[in-house]
Image (cartoon, rainbow, N blue to C red; front, side, top):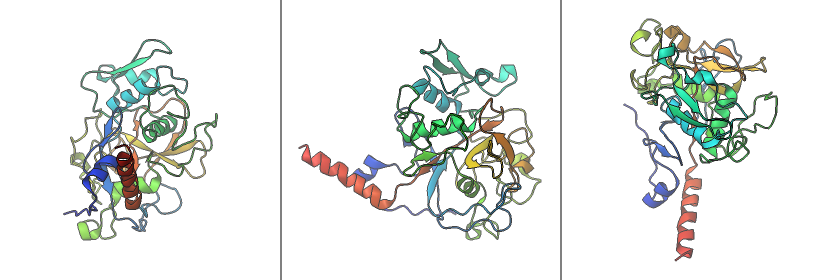
Length: 330
């Protein structure tokens, strides 16, 4: 049984500033469900923790944070495009995203109209499927948009080009780094690794607190029942069971992008967790794949978000500010 400690905060302050981790967070356009990743200050995985051949150990995170309950969906990405891509100078959309099951593909995001007045729609029934054909630059611009409060308008520094990541470098290399004060972001290697593999031994996890596979096992033989592997398509979230923290499809479904550059490969990022076309062993803690950060994206690639949990003092201070402002207006 997992026990999550939640601080007692006055209801008005709590409602005005943030939402309980158990509920979806309200934005202007979409409401993204997240789960809390606790156990701040945990150690790195001392047995593996390197995601393939990368040096160093991973998994230790000294703060609590939230991660998307699901991969970003076609419906959520369509809302993003309708907000900022009436014109699309940064290539947030590509035509292959429109190809759905009838074309032997896994998309279903349709663009209508012409440049300057584009609109976007989703094939019926595809809204809760994961968006694919994503590259790191698209994912980071989505994060900027979330961080900035889901604004509507042209792609500029107030919508997609700054906030969490400064996208002003025309080459994109080196990869933009997460800026101070971030609220939403693409996961880094430690955040994703912990959310995927960590489960304390005291909470019925593995003896060293980390599993080898995302489906909470060290066995390579049981994956057909615990994730979307070795299949021919994506499925809506919740077809397979969630992991210890309550996140779905950390393994299988689509390979997920990280903000962390792949050491020694400046034009590549990490794609982790494996996809539906892989065997379950691709969700192993010692597996990753090279992924070009720009250009046409592999069809088997998606992403999820992380969300920063405000420090209690900051939350209360913000709430008091709201109350004091309200009093002054009486």
